[in-house]
Length: 261
Image (cartoon, one colour):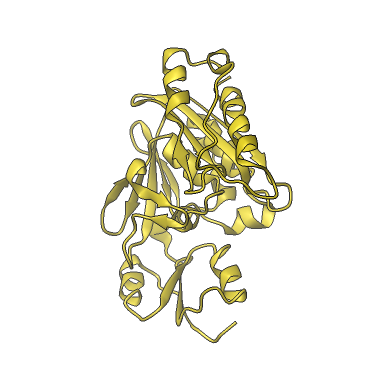
């Protein structure tokens, strides 16, 4: 690992000012950034640790939405009585990310900014139609995820919080890769004011995506039975040593049915 400068700003303003440094990288939980640096995949001149910024943390109810700070850890989301009461599926998702060490270090904002194609949180954000707040603007979930490890964030833009609409119903099912515990296929399903949403992670070559065909079936009948015999095209799905594209395609409606049931 190469030498680098390390900064710990106490406010968003300070963090934004540091972003102007050449090759500077923000770090939240560091679960991906540090591993990438160890492997020599990236070599930032400055690591800007956002962990000391209090305004990035916390969970609160705001009308018919839960607002979760970007610096809130997975363990904190999973243990939150507010999340458990309002969106139990989100608490369940957070409680099964990685292992205990990852859950106590990894953060919501870090996961979204990295946008790993097999990460769990992107499915919840897209599946609930959430809004991503940054230090510059607000971005709808449908506009945030642009592809593998790619988001709508501009250089120097920081995720500050996510606003999750509280649904009438929601469910999460994950078929995990046993070694990494990432989603081989993960499906988040919800029914709310904006209708039915089905978001899939781990299966798409371009990252998280919505399964519109399954959404249409559940919009007519929100039940596991509605997805009996449903299929998803294997085109553009991942195929690797853990499972073929056809295998992932077969898993998606099965997991969606379990999430809806």
